[in-house]
Length: 508
Image 1 (tube, rainbow, N blue to C red):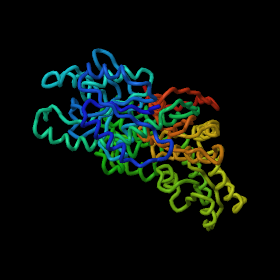
Image 2 (tube, helix red, strand yellow; image 1 turned 60 degrees about the horizontal axis):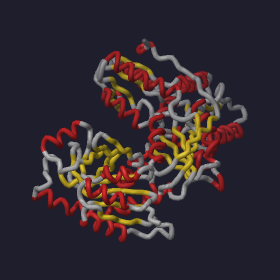
Image 3 (spheres, rainbow, N blue to C red; image 1 turned 180 degrees about the vertical axis):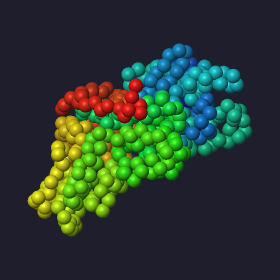
């Protein structure tokens, strides 16, 4: 039985795809069986050919296409998020997975809607389709999408012409040579997509995604924009997630690494990770209108550091060098603080006074616990924080990961690479799986999921760091659903009902 049928309109397209498939390395006996079929040009021929195709695990259409979106150029690859024709729409939910794989293969891929037209589109008709939000146009994909039914379906087009470079132009025809080479490179990626197809179960760890401190910080920036207008300057990333940052940038937030980049007197938000007193003093000297989005749980660690230092203790902070929270806390106790990242760091401490210790709020609880135990063994009189410094959200998400990892073949943690709590979730997941550990991966979104990770995987554990929008988890679930039947089950370990008040500067 064929695992994947790849349809092309033209013989030159079919030959290019087949050549690429023959050239790919053989990954073993479970290599997907791929059949390339030439279906002819135009919707009528495509419909007749589609009716004759045998049942298959997956169906794809590829070949040349025309650009509608201004951002597409000849040689670019469009992976359709949906196919439109005659008022009907066929979703292609696995598009982000395919596009990400094409990007990793070195191809200039992007995602967007594809429209199928019964004829070659030029001039005003092309501009009209662009105004409707379509990115590219072809003449065959709709017929194949309709024939696919419930099967996994993908439409991938290599751009050969644009509104500024018409199809029947000598320069455009020359670009078709490069487009054929691109098609040959698309074939192996489609084979990897087919190898990832199959029914799956997704175990959703809960709680996941935003915590109260992150929600508060984002709301502070949004309210500052509403109240004071753009631009509102934010020192460092408000929370460590690229999707949050980009969304706020679109609304008028300007993120800076240093207050020197902020005009005097401008509205400035301090991030959820907190700042050192020296930063507050600089803001005061420059007359900045500060709105402090420091998480109250981080502020608690700052207060404890000041209390311990005031009585003459060496304040030992368990944390990771370079993290903004660590810089802010140690900035509270200049000359009286020390950072330790692991148990080996405890051995290097040479205090000339009493010792107290604190913890970065986003650490893995088990690792931080081992370092704290090492501190107490070496300094039996060392005093720790009043209550656990590691925030409730970090702890809850780590407990939730443990609740699903034992059953997962693959653990996906959705979050940005600079997010400490997302990194710690990935480490916890890697330590607590069955038969040693599941494969645990940190991804910013569905485009970061390598198709080879999914090969043979039937149960995926899924969670997200406390600074990750829930929409990104939903996007991952939707993309996995484009690879076959999906059963989604939520595993909840606790309820979260924490709320924090807003600073007076942005309260209603």
